[in-house]
Amino acid sequence: MNLFHLTRRAVSTAIAGVLLSSMAAGALAQGAPAVRLGFSMARTGMLANATPSQLNTYELWREQVNARGGLNVGGVMRKVEFVTYDDQSRPDQAVRIYEKLITDDKVDLLLAPWGTPFHISIAPVLEKYKFPMVGNTAASVALRQVKPGYIWFPTSAIPDRLGSELAAMLKAQNVKSVAVLANVLPFTKEIKTFLEPELKKAGIEVKLSTDYPPDIKDMTSTLTQVKQLNPDAVIALAYPGDSVLYAKQAKELGIASPYQFVAVGPSDAFFPKAVGASSTEGVITIAHWAPKAEWKGSQAFYDAYVKKFGEEPDYLNSSLAWMSLEILETAVAKNGLDKARIREQISTDTFQTINGPVRFNGVENAITPTAFVQYQKGKMQLVWPQSMATGPLQTKKAW
Image (cartoon, rainbow, N blue to C red):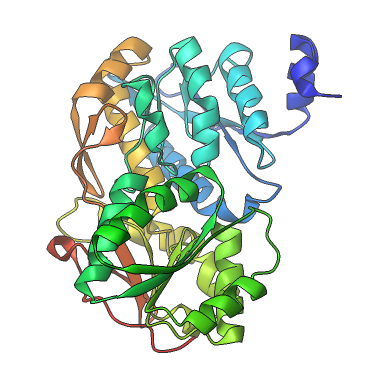
């Protein structure tokens, strides 16, 4: 049966079937009830391998907040609990879940799901119920129409900005030709749309431009073309699953382009585990964070994450998830759970985060530079722009 045609009661029953947990923090803080934060996450399905770094970050934050006595809600310390569901890697399921979280579960606050398609899908739900939510693992030019609406993106990895910065970085390295491979999901599709005109303006030849479906299982034929064309750079606009597929098959076929840009996925700890640590050397990807001393709390976040989970945080998605929590926490401390006031502060204020100051212009982060990182000797280094680099950009020697 199509769930869109289920009755309200049946929808609630169906969604309840995928309830994973209500991770209660336990006792009340100073006699006040716990603050309930709701979200969906892809625990199963095509995107399940991408979400642990975001969910881990949420869990680390909850643990730290409750350990210090709770969340400051307008001056009252209250413990935090999560109400979370599996959206099964389906944006349509996320829509139903977020409506249920608001109307049936009556959560106090919302946290973001994983990925651009999910943020885009739930944005109308947030508008309908006037419920503010700080996004994180998503970016879309299309959502500018919200102006400023009830959703915000702390990332600087917006597709049009990515296109111009990636072209500028390649031009600075004297790259003359590229091959562009793009997953057709919204984020990567948008990047490609803005990137190719910027490459042309930079005088960089696009020797191959091709799209592929999200569930691709084999890139051999496309990568055989890439090898024959031998471009200076390969730009694989991938999601986590196909980023691994690209890296493995590029290694098998001996793709020798000196610049290999793969997004998104390589910034996560699962990537070197999946493709082999030596294969990551020289891979460039999207991220604008690193544990830098000048960004207050960034090293502490890095250290706490590694201590708890035994691996590095994702330099893109973990940092964005933590930034979104910092912004929400600041707004709730000042405004309590008044959603109109929370929305007003997030829309107008400047927030201090582990990635430096963040201020929103509409839905977008107006301060943080768009940036890229590269694996160098097993560690991530910020390599672009030069103003925030922690290391120089290097060519990829081999897989």
